[in-house]
Image 1 (cartoon, helix red, strand yellow):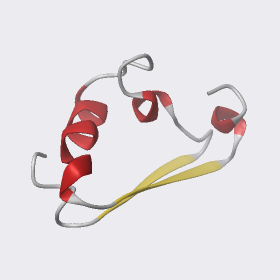
Image 2 (spheres, helix red, strand yellow):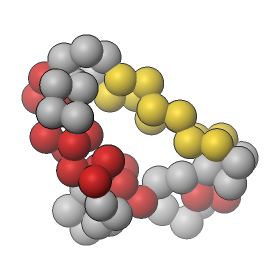
Image 3 (cartoon, rainbow, N blue to C red):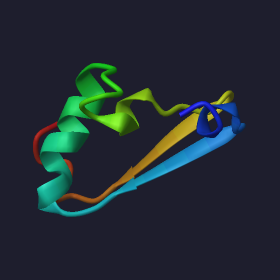
Length: 58
């Protein structure tokens, strides 16, 4: 994640009900091995664009 985490902004797009468990896990704890997206962040901003189906477990 080193290169990604040096970006000023990082945008993550999550869509579909099948992504709901991974999104829920990423939002609760940083565990790069289990959920790589949980460790991603921008130096100034991290934006999550999530559809309704993916957000059902939040």
